[in-house]
Image (cartoon, rainbow, N blue to C red; front, side, top):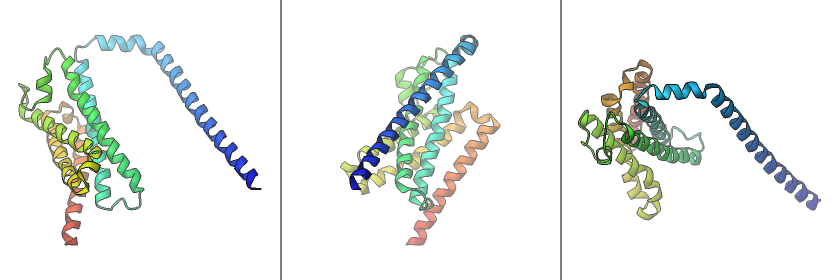
Length: 227
């Protein structure tokens, strides 16, 4: 009886693996077919649009900046849900993993947001201007705040890998830099981001920052009542 159970379990495991492989193959096949169809149908039109303007890198920078900010905001929300225990009904391990990986992906988009400007012939910036605060000739303060926020986010995101070397207490203090990073980047968004003048994005920025502010206020209040 036990042998039959083991055989059935092994067969079920093999079937599950085969089903997963077939699912991946099916998704890739559909993606390739869909991408090929789109390329054949709209490829020429898209290429004409790209060649019709010299602001492609600027648009890519703006788009990646919005995505990077959105990911950072989600990372902040998940982190605050853990620290305030508002997410006690959620799977803590998964929420922490989302908090960690969203922070890392946000760093990637933020780096792309700044690095792609090196290819923009209109701005004509160099690597030092992109990396160092106050390097830009225009919007120096707003851009400098964004650069400082990026470096603080970079430190916080990669501090996950230093945790076992510096200890839990030191890591927690280092992780508080996340709040400063979010504040600096939020100011940067309103001071420099041309997209912030669009009503939908303006509402998103204001709403997302309000959510973070309320979560931080709740956390501070809970700490005060706990004393």
